[in-house]
Image (cartoon, rainbow, N blue to C red):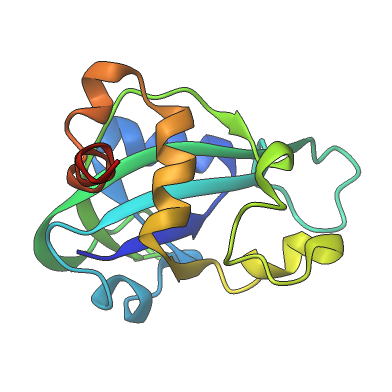
Length: 159
């Protein structure tokens, strides 16, 4: 079991949650192929909507916005438009609350430079430790949903 962060705008994450899929790095297949059935993904959204970089209307989000489990090993194409056919994976998302990243920056091991913490998300998809995953997941999930995450149950029994 591995743990991942995917980076996407909150509106794009909401589409994935509603459709039961994840898509990262503007639809590239390679990052999705690193994931396997039983892995977990948490989405980080730096902004609320996907807008061009030079747009003045981009609204900041800076939250972890979704959490889910990869449910199979299929990486597949999906034609969103005739000119845009991204790759996706099927994910069972859990009910969760979005949480602000700022209170956790100093505790997260995958953020090496705490003063330039946004740099950690630059590639759009990264593997994180179980410890980092559990820290984030425990704050995002209610008790019923947390009971569905094996790594959180392992931590409870280890204490």
